[in-house]
Image (cartoon, rainbow, N blue to C red; front, side):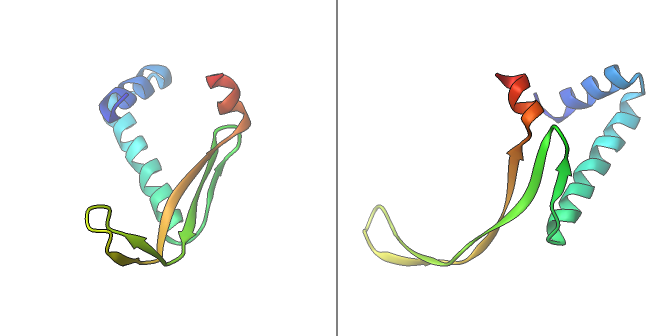
Length: 90
Protein backbone atom coordinates (compact mmCIF):
# COMPACT_ATOMS: atom_id res chain seq x y z
CA UNK A 1 0.00 0.00 0.00
CA UNK A 2 1.41 3.39 -0.97
CA UNK A 3 0.52 6.83 0.38
CA UNK A 4 -2.32 7.52 -2.08
CA UNK A 5 -3.88 4.12 -1.38
CA UNK A 6 -3.63 4.83 2.35
CA UNK A 7 -5.35 8.19 1.86
CA UNK A 8 -8.13 6.43 -0.07
CA UNK A 9 -8.55 3.88 2.75
CA UNK A 10 -8.64 6.61 5.42
CA UNK A 11 -11.21 8.61 3.44
CA UNK A 12 -13.41 5.54 2.99
CA UNK A 13 -13.29 4.34 6.60
CA UNK A 14 -13.70 7.80 8.15
CA UNK A 15 -16.28 8.93 5.55
CA UNK A 16 -14.37 12.15 4.79
CA UNK A 17 -13.14 13.69 1.52
CA UNK A 18 -9.80 12.49 0.16
CA UNK A 19 -8.34 15.99 0.50
CA UNK A 20 -9.12 16.05 4.23
CA UNK A 21 -7.72 12.53 4.65
CA UNK A 22 -4.53 13.60 2.87
CA UNK A 23 -4.13 16.62 5.14
CA UNK A 24 -4.75 14.46 8.21
CA UNK A 25 -2.17 11.89 7.13
CA UNK A 26 0.36 14.63 6.38
CA UNK A 27 -0.30 16.15 9.82
CA UNK A 28 0.29 12.79 11.53
CA UNK A 29 3.54 12.21 9.63
CA UNK A 30 4.71 15.75 10.38
CA UNK A 31 3.86 15.39 14.09
CA UNK A 32 5.70 12.06 14.42
CA UNK A 33 8.71 13.47 12.56
CA UNK A 34 8.75 16.57 14.77
CA UNK A 35 8.58 14.53 17.96
CA UNK A 36 11.40 12.22 16.85
CA UNK A 37 13.51 15.20 15.78
CA UNK A 38 13.04 16.68 19.26
CA UNK A 39 14.22 13.40 20.80
CA UNK A 40 10.80 12.28 22.05
CA UNK A 41 9.11 8.98 21.33
CA UNK A 42 5.56 8.56 20.02
CA UNK A 43 3.52 5.80 21.67
CA UNK A 44 0.27 4.66 20.04
CA UNK A 45 -1.15 2.09 22.45
CA UNK A 46 -1.95 -1.14 20.63
CA UNK A 47 -0.24 0.00 17.42
CA UNK A 48 3.37 0.61 18.37
CA UNK A 49 6.11 2.98 19.43
CA UNK A 50 8.19 5.26 17.24
CA UNK A 51 11.53 6.21 18.81
CA UNK A 52 15.07 7.28 17.97
CA UNK A 53 17.99 4.93 18.51
CA UNK A 54 21.61 6.00 18.48
CA UNK A 55 24.33 3.97 16.84
CA UNK A 56 27.87 4.58 18.01
CA UNK A 57 30.83 5.30 15.77
CA UNK A 58 32.64 2.19 14.62
CA UNK A 59 35.19 0.83 12.18
CA UNK A 60 33.95 -0.81 9.00
CA UNK A 61 35.50 -2.33 5.91
CA UNK A 62 34.99 -1.56 2.25
CA UNK A 63 33.87 -4.94 0.87
CA UNK A 64 35.53 -4.37 -2.51
CA UNK A 65 38.98 -3.32 -1.30
CA UNK A 66 39.04 -4.51 2.31
CA UNK A 67 40.18 -1.01 3.31
CA UNK A 68 39.23 0.10 6.83
CA UNK A 69 36.94 3.11 7.09
CA UNK A 70 35.30 5.04 9.90
CA UNK A 71 31.51 4.88 10.20
CA UNK A 72 30.19 7.94 12.03
CA UNK A 73 27.72 7.83 14.91
CA UNK A 74 24.12 8.36 13.80
CA UNK A 75 20.58 8.63 15.08
CA UNK A 76 18.12 6.25 13.45
CA UNK A 77 14.32 6.14 13.58
CA UNK A 78 12.91 2.93 15.02
CA UNK A 79 9.46 1.34 15.26
CA UNK A 80 8.42 -1.39 17.68
CA UNK A 81 5.05 -2.99 16.96
CA UNK A 82 2.49 -3.11 19.78
CA UNK A 83 0.71 -6.21 21.02
CA UNK A 84 -2.54 -5.59 19.12
CA UNK A 85 -0.69 -5.04 15.83
CA UNK A 86 1.37 -8.19 16.32
CA UNK A 87 -1.76 -10.22 17.07
CA UNK A 88 -3.61 -8.78 14.05
CA UNK A 89 -0.79 -9.76 11.71
CA UNK A 90 -0.43 -13.31 13.05
